[in-house]
Image 1 (cartoon, rainbow, N blue to C red):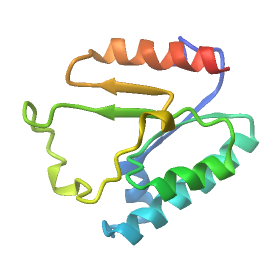
Image 2 (image 1 turned 90 degrees about the horizontal axis):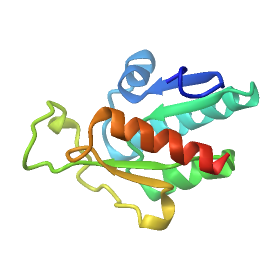
Image 3 (image 1 turned 60 degrees about the horizontal axis):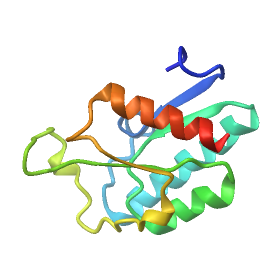
Length: 132
């Protein structure tokens, strides 16, 4: 990704983040606590003029709104895929009460079951450039 954009990028992965902070609480409150902590860390990274790429599932509107209150320059990308066609091995961690965002909450919506990784990356980069 660094080849595409002339900026420093801090990448935060949700699974690795959970491992570091040992939050194994997958209840709604546990997910909210984890996402709010990640959002606060991302806000700190932004204060250092980093571009922060967060690969997290934000299943609740209140978590998305919390990050938006911390940082006004959030580019939201909603990834989804056809669950009937592909087993990814993370099904035990699906959010049963996922609050599907309305299309106005996202800058980009990608169906990863129809697009290649390169197509997804190109779409993210092109959207980022348009917004900045």
